[in-house]
Image (cartoon, rainbow, N blue to C red; front, top):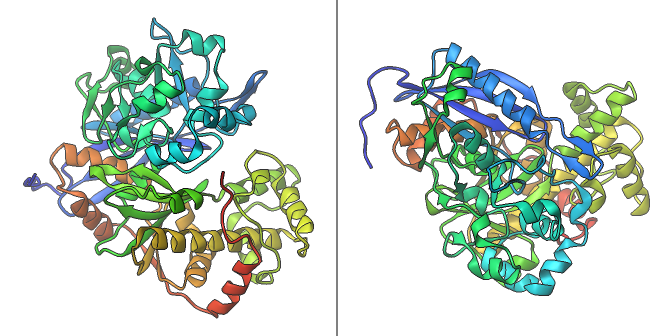
Amino acid sequence: MTTTPPSSAFASAFAAVDLGATSGRVIVGRVGRDNLDLTEVHRFPNTPVRLPDGLRWDVLALFQGILDGLREAARSGGVASIGVDTWAVDYGLLDADGALLGHPFHYRDDRTDGAAADVWARIGANELYSITGLQHLPFNTVFQLAASTNTAQRDAARILLLIPDLLVHWLTGSIGAEETNASTTGLFDARTGTWSNNILSRLSLDSGLFPPLRTPGDPAGTLLPHVAAFTGLDPRTPVTTVASHDTASAVVAVPATKSGFAYISCGTWSLAGLELDAPVLSEESRAANFTNERGIDGTVRYLRNIMGMWLLEECRRTWEKENLPTHIPTLLADAARAEAFASLVDPDAPEFLAPGDMPARIREYCARTGQRVPGSQGAVVRCILESLALAHRRTLRQAAELSGRDISRIHLVGGGSRNDLLCQLTADATGLPVVAGPTEATALGNILVQARAAGLVEDLADMRRLIASTQHLRHYAPRGDIAAWDTAAARLSPAPRNL
C-alpha cells in the first residue's frame, strides 16, 4: 500500500522492547520521511537464575524492566505504538486461570539432553525436517516440550506462549503467537505457514495449547489499565505485532538496496544466511543443518545458527573473576597482534554451549585436536574470531550452493558489527566485501514494522532504503591470501554436526 508520509521531520515515536540473552532495553525510535533516530531510554540486566530444577529466566524481573522502560518512554514524550522482540524457542505455560506456571526454562538448561531421540521415535528426523525445515538444535521448542512430558506443570498447562507473546499478553491481555517466532519451534509447517497438526498429533500435543498466529504489523491490543497507570502512557496506546524473533527483526534492518546479498546477524549467536522466497527442504539442506525460518512478508530466513560472540563473552566473564583485563578494545588489539591460525575451534562444538570457564574449554579443545594451546588472552580471542570467520565462510558458501543463489556481498548487523577485527576477518575468509552495521538492527527492524503499520513507510525495500541512508555503515574489503584461509578451513571439520 502506498502512503504519503507526514511533512514533519520526525512524524512519530515508537517504543521497541528488545530483550537479548544478557540485557533488555527499551528504545524509542522517531521515524520521518528521511529520518530515523534512536534513543535508548532504559536498559536492564537479564540474569538467569539457577533453581533446584534447572536454569530459568527471571521473566518477572524482565517484565518490571519493560514497565520501567515504558515509563521512561512516556516521560520522553510518549509513543505512538509499542513492539516486543526477544530470543526464540523458550516459552511460558499458563494454567486455566491464565496464571504463569513457573518461570520459563532457559534454552541452555540441560533437561533436553536426549529429548530429540524421544521425538524422532515418533516422527523421524528426516520427516520432521521435511515439514518444518528447521535446523536441529537440542533446545528447539519441540524438544523442550518432549522433556516436559508427564510433569505437573505440563499437565496443568492450557496455553503456551513464546517469550515475546507472553510479554505482549501481560501488556495487553491478548493471546496470540507471532509467526516468525513460531517458525523456530519445530512445530510449524514451513510450506503452509501454520502450526503443523501432523506434528502435534504425532507427538500427542494438544492443539489448544498453541494460540492463533499473528503476522508482523497486526494489532495485538492496547495497554491494560494497570500498565497504562504505571507507565503514564495513554491506555489507548497500541501494541503492534512486530517480527518478534529478534533475528527476524534484525534482518528487516539489513541495509541492502540490491539483490545478491547475504547477512550475518552477529550477537550472542551468529545467524548467517540468505533471504529467500521459498523454503529449501531438500535432504542435502537437512544434512547441512540449515534452517528455514519465517521472515516478514512471506520471506524465508535460510540460515544456520553459529555459536557467536557467546564464546568471547563467556571468556570475559571468566577473566573478570580472575581479575584479568576484559576491556574489548584491549583484547582486540592483543588479538590483532597474535599469530594467525595458531589455533582454531569449531564454535558449534557441544562443549561450548553451556555457561562456564570458556578459556579452559578452548584450551582443552585445542590440546585434544593436536593444536597449539593458546596461552595469552590475545591468542584465545584470535582463535575465537578466526574460528567464527571460518564458520561464516563455510555457512554462507553452503547456503549459496544449496539454494542456487550467488552472493556478491555480506551485510553484518548487530552487536558484532562493532568488532572491526571480526568484520575484517570475515571479509578475508570469504573473499567478499562486508558492510558492517547497523549495530541496533533488531530495534530498528522492530520500530520500522511499527512505522509501516502506522503508514509512515511503505514496503520492505523502503524500510531498507531508510536504514541505508540514515545509519552509520562501515565497509571492509577482503585482503590477504585466500589460500591461507583455505588451508585453515581444511583443519576443521568440513561439515557441521548434525543428526
